[in-house]
Structures are given as C-alpha cells and as structure tokens.
Image (cartoon, rainbow, N blue to C red; front, side, top):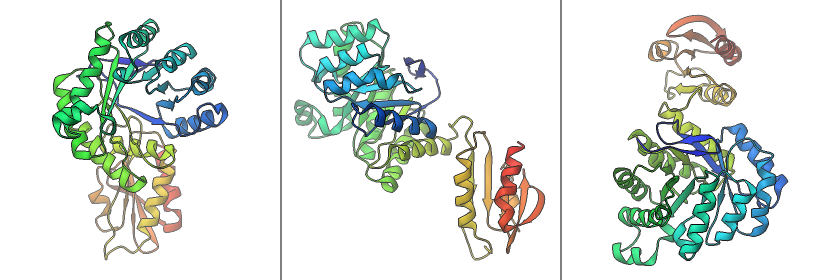
Length: 345
C-alpha cells in the first residue's frame, strides 16, 4: 500500500483505482490544437494528461488549456525551474520534474514551496536514458539499482523542504530492467508509482512491451498510475492502457471480450465478427464479459462464464446468455442481436 496524492482531485495511490495517463504531442503553445487532442484523449478514457513545457510560451498557455479541458493537467519540465514556477501560477495540477536537474538548492526550494502552497504533487521521472554519470559509472550502466538510487537522490532534495506529495517513475527501454527497478523501489518506499516502459516503439511491439512490463507489475500489486508510451497517436496509448487494465480485471465499468481461436470446425467469419464486436464495445461501459465463439457445438459451454455471447455455425449462429442458448439467428444479424441483449443488461 502506497501513500496517496491528489492530482487535480484525482487520487493516485493509497488503494485508489489505477489511473490512465497520456501525453500530448502537439506544440503546447498552440492552445487550440492541444485542447482538441486532449478532448479526444478524454473521450478515449484518459484520466490525467501531461503536456511538454520546453519554453515560456508553452508555460503561458497552460492556464488557457486547463480552462477548456476536464481532466487534471500535468506539466513536464526539464532543467528550467522558472518554467515550473510559471506553470504553477497558470494553475497546473501537478509538476513532473527532477529536482537534481534544475540547479542549486534555492531553485529546488522555490519549486517545492510553490507546489506545497497550492497542494500540487511533484512526479520525479527517472529515465534510463538520462541517468546521472556518477551512477552509470558506479553500476556499470543502466541497472535497477542505479534507477532506484537516482530516484532516492531526487526524493531527498524535496524531503529536505518537508515536501512529500511525490510520485515516482523509473522507466527504461528494457522491460526486464524496468520491472526489476519498480519491484526494488516498491520494497524500499511507499511513494506512489507511475508505471511505464519508455521508448517501446510503434503500436504493436510497444503495446506488447507495455503489457508485459506494466501488466506484470500490476499483477504483482505494484503501481498506482500508468502511461503506455507509443510512437503513435496518443489515443492509441489510452486504448492500450485500457486493454491492459481489462486483461487484469482492473478496469471499472468496462467490458471484457473473449473470443476463441479459429480452427477447422469454424464455418462462420469468426475473425470479422470478433472485430465488429470489439469495435462496438468501445461505446459500452458495463462490467460484463462478452464472448465470440466459432463453434455452436461447444461455444456456449466453453463461454458459460460470459454474461452474453454468440457462437457461430454455417451462415448462422447462436445467441446465448450465461451459457444458456437464447435463440438462433442468421450471421448478418448476430452482432446487432448481441448488442440488443447487451443493452438489456
């Protein structure tokens, strides 16, 4: 159990539901483009959004962006503490910064005091690609121990000013290193953990890496919030994150789709049906299990635990509920009939 922080009123840690984050890829100073992307991410299921703040123009746009969105806004700061102070003044909900990278103690103190005065948490974002040179020399490269020691170094800089609203991430492009670092950190600290595997690549491989790294840690009870990092439209990050939580049974009010692999008994377009159902389920927000099975002989039996489902035959299929057959319908009506049944649940 980790301690709890609040990001714009959204609880992170302390037993709160795991939250989904993403990051915009628009130019932050372009308020209209950034807001439009955030609204798309909200619709997809994003619960906390982060924007890059590389300069003062981006910092000055934070207030205007926040006024037009509905989820907490985190600002991503590197090196320049003045940008953090400007974003705090603009009304951001949290700051992502590494205290050890912003200069002397007076600058760390200024950021800590500004955030503390407004009850804003700070996320310390340790990344394998930017580890301190002394730690790389000490451990011979990017290791779990190096990532954790870096995190505690940054934490100490904030704790000396009695600042404790902290979240920590320890990301690496290596799934194995990332998982080991979070496991090590979890055993040494009760600060909430922001999960992620960084630089995972494009949608397919990036989702696989994230599912292993993030999903594996969540299955062990480690992690409080997450971002799936993909070289893709940020909306794809949110969909991947939702799917990871669904697979673990951790997605509140979201359906779970199960479908069987095709085999020589399949006489219906099972793959097409499964994709149709998956696509339409994006609009359904109920904690139900929906099955798409390829064989009428054992489909309902195998999917007896599903709330509703369909099982294919040759040009037709069965509609069933909790393993009990409801009726037989032509293939072209199967999906519509299924969703009529879902609407009744």
